[in-house]
Image (tube, rainbow, N blue to C red; front, side):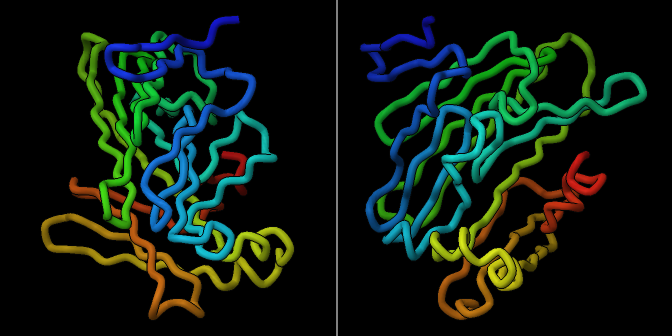
Length: 227
């Protein structure tokens, strides 16, 4: 089974089949801030010690078909219903017309085409900056008018990796979130564990105006998380 090829000119490995035997990860950032991103858009991001300063939830033991830490959904109207899929292939597992994951030095770029919609996403951590950036470009190639929604998702974790696993009751109660709205339509979601609210705050934002957001996973997925 062939899963991709080496692009010597661009110094990349290009994955063309997302169903690899294991996740192909690529390190981004530095030891002070960074982590890795896998070939289906999942990521683990940490500040310093990954056991004590973890930001995004990434559980390797979960099935490869589930998104880990971060993902992106695309939604468009198909007749009288909405169609939702992930351009990263997981977790929706839709049939793709094109899938490429370009694994480069310090960055990953995922290019895909589903339902006449082309999505390009470049993921990296800027040098000496404590943030992960995802540059997303969506192009309608269907030949018909479409209203397209891009829905970015991040699932945070407790900063202590061990407690995230062994304290199922207390840990969820420590996770807090709020939003900051600006007059120009931009929005920033703030997340932190309440005992670190004055020292360690995570943020999630976009340079485009936001039409809606949700900070509760059950409500986001809908139908008691079966939506």
